[in-house]
Image 1 (cartoon, rainbow, N blue to C red):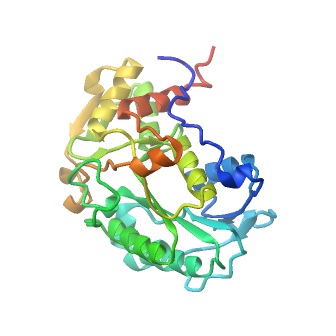
Image 2 (cartoon, rainbow, N blue to C red):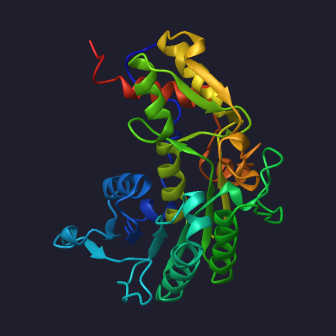
Length: 312
């Protein structure tokens, strides 16, 4: 395995009419502290846009481009005018949405719709999820009716409907994987240190790289596009098969990965996802996106994880 991360997963966005014309936008990122928000802030600034971000961390509001905003608050403050507002913040853990439904609905539905209505003629892009569908078949097309089975999926479907009714855009995402964060990163560390892990055989995901998300959001914002977009990897893979692939790449014995069933380990049936992959035809037409196989995405994460510690 190469010691340096491979970049073939990134599709360079062609210069949009907005950028070509020299019209650089004022963009508001709601939830700038998260994985996507932080990376998106850096990416959009690099493209020349004026970017502001909201945060729940009060100590960061002394920065000129940071605004305090807690989506869980019953009353939301006014937001500054912007050509585009990108809503990245969400309560995305299934268990939290199930156990704290009122708070989750405020964060995932009520607050985004309030912000969208206050956008002062600016466009809104809502980041959503493949779990707005029932996840019982792969490569679902964007025009299929939503059929969520989880509390989180139902909330995102409701938020989508509201944003679309206001003329905004929705970007549905499958599972984002990146070096140093999330379940795959934990498994890489554990297996590399000689530990054993458990992974679900009956629970699948469809990985995408963070850079593809950045390209998709920038393209939607700069092309002034509305409606529904879907960003997905090329195929679904079980968490157990993903863990076995990591073990193989690291030269770890396969028996260090124990396959178990999610439904036997506290995951409600309605939250198990046999498939999460989506059809990406519209993004492919918009900026040439090509879905990659799951093992290629995982390989990139493994390579990036060791790029510094194992570099020659």
